[in-house]
Image (cartoon, rainbow, N blue to C red):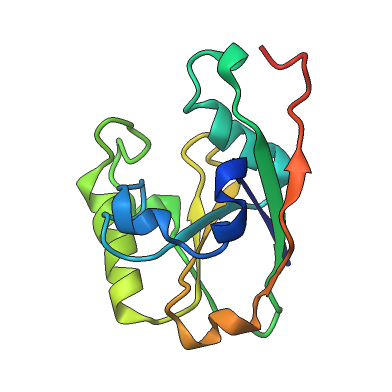
Length: 153
């Protein structure tokens, strides 16, 4: 299974390191642990970036990467049915979603966590745990330059 990650070009060398998770909270984690966020498609990864950029004229240079997750690798799945009603909220993220992700990172139960996307709940986000022993089985692609279509407002 392929997943995609899109990030600022300045993070090219650390695209798959999870270093950002050490410094910044996210929907599915609290700062302090390495975690990599990805998406089931490159278009969903674009949406995940776009919602954080208020002025599209200030679009930073971007890179993307593909990760190939072997079918034999165990993936833990979060179902929407088990989430609180307002799990999609932003600023602040819901404490329950952060607890779920933090517990997953702490348990080391799998290298991959599949979670519903807050932007498109019918699609999936994927979290990778670089500290998990099976993370090395994931084939991480070399970052490539990504150019947003100029029609995107």
